[in-house]
Amino acid sequence: MSQSPEIVIFDLGKVLVDFDYSICARKVSAKGKLAPEQVQQLIDHSPLLFRYETGKIDKTEFPREVCKLTGYCGTLGEFAPDFSDIFSPIEPMIALHADLRRRGVPTFILSNTNDMAAGHIRHAFPFFSNFDGYILSYEQGVMKPQARIYEIAEEITGRKADQIIYIDDRFENVEPGRLRGWHVIHHQAPDATIRRIQELELTGDGLP
Image: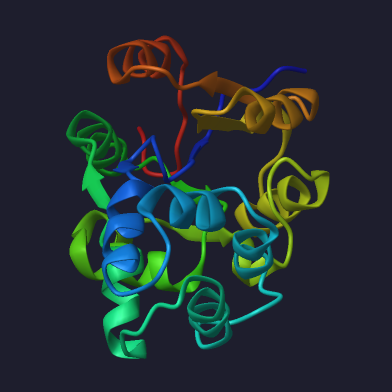
């Protein structure tokens, strides 16, 4: 029997906060030996970030590897903001999350991310602390779209199948949720996502 959704799981990057790795690339390049384009390719499209975001290396090993590959000469204390201060809020989606919380709908984060980025977002954006739980790739040792992280999300939230609404900007990341029976929203614009949320009949724990 089909059930009304009870919770909303949000992706983080490009859904609640925008990000731009070119900002990091310019900062690292300015203290190193590679051009910004080379730094961005190294950080954004290499196995190094994958290893970091699946917890294979930690927040001291990752900067060391970047330093070796780019000639970055800043300190460890400088690297964290140079790497992580690349985010800006997506205000309509943050407002959507706040509205869901006011209505008593449990909310969760499911994100491919790393501890430096998560720490920066937690410090810079107060909304990030207002979720019922977090499924973060670097803590779980697995990334979307691998099936295991969606299983973990069901274990952590205590919900499954059509009890879940999941919002993500990447089609390859929403598809595994859809195959599990989740209500999925392939996020492309806040207005469209908000309309789709309004169409679904949420029955969160705090709702009458």
